[in-house]
Image (tube, rainbow, N blue to C red; front, side):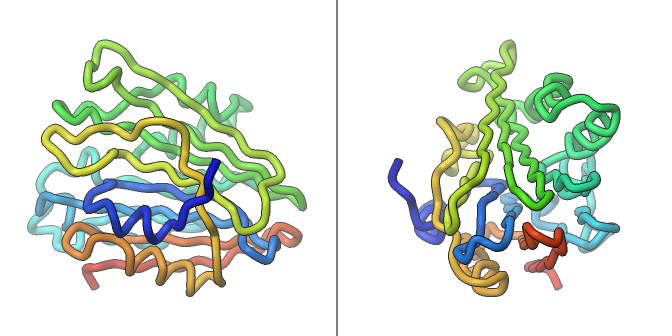
Length: 236
C-alpha cells in the first residue's frame, strides 16, 4: 500500500467530516493520535474541545446557540489504564465501560450501530491504542450498507508493532455531498512526521478553513507512558 501524505489527503477533501489518525512518531518513540471535527451547520460549528481528566469532551462554544446536543456533545477521548480510546461519538463511553468489564474493543462495538441521523447515517469511527512498553492499536467503523439503514456493517483493523513514521487515517465521509457518502475501504496508510507541534500544525492548516472546528493531538511516550497533548479550537 502506498503511503500518503496526511496534509494532501486533508487539503484535497473539503469535508471528510470527523477523522481519527493513529500511528507512531517518526523517531519511533511515541504513540500518536489525532482527532478532528468539522461542521457544515451552525450547531456543528458551535463547538470546542476542552480537557476532561485524562481525556477531552466537546462543549458548546455559545450555549445560547446550542440546538440538538444529542450527536455533537460527547467525550471523544477517554483513558482506561494503558489504553486510550478515541471516537467520534458517545461510543467512547460504551467502549470504556464494557472494556472495564473485560469485554474486547470489538465486543463493545457490537452493541452499537451508525448514527441515527438520516439520510446521512454517519458512521461511528473508533480507535484504541494500547501502550505498555510495546504498542498496538486498532481502528473500527460501523456503517450503513451504502446508505441503507436496514443493515449495519462492522469493520475492525488491528495493527501490532507499527512502523516508525507511519499511521492510519479513517474518517466519516468519503467527501462532501447530500446525503454525505460514508467512508469506504480500509484506513489509509499515512505518513506521521515531526514533533507534536509540527504534526498539530500540519493537520490544522490542511483542514478546510470554512468547515474545520476543533483538533486534538496526543503523543504518548511508549517506554514511560507519559502523554503530551494539544487542543486547537477555531472558536476561541
